[in-house]
Amino acid sequence: MGTRCNVKVTGGKNTVWIYRHWDGYPEGAGRDLYTILRSVGRHGGGNRVHPNNLCAGDVAAAIVGWTEPPKDWHREGEVYMPFEFTEAEHRDIEYLYSVRVKRDGGFYDGRTITVTVHAVEYHYSDDYEKCTKKKRRLFSGTVQEFGVYVHGADWIEEGVGAEAGVAP
Image (cartoon, rainbow, N blue to C red; front, side, top):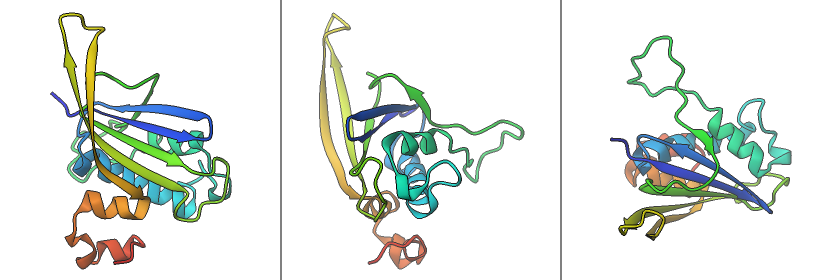
């Protein structure tokens, strides 16, 4: 059974929901999400997003369109697509990543995108439709700070963080 997560991308009045069925924990989906968001901020995530006109839909498209397989991917010929669009928050997730584009359609400056990570627990009664949800915030900050969160405190000391543009 996978560790599921949702990514909620918001900007202005726009909200886009994304689902991931496996490796939803910060060391899995969190690291992938950081790689994508760092790319969006640096050069628009390839040809999909221009950083001078950044909006929630563009960021969501960059996340879902990301297909870089992990180093241990052994399924030759299969496309790696860990994220998919969905209509709303799923009730089987363990993590919720909220990605906020502060100036929807504005210039990216390093503080334009913020990330919040919650651990989520659902509790069901006999009636499946009546469930309670508990969220516990684990992290909130800029994309650069998120990189340190998902990679750990030693990340900068090893030089990886410095290469990613994260200042100690």
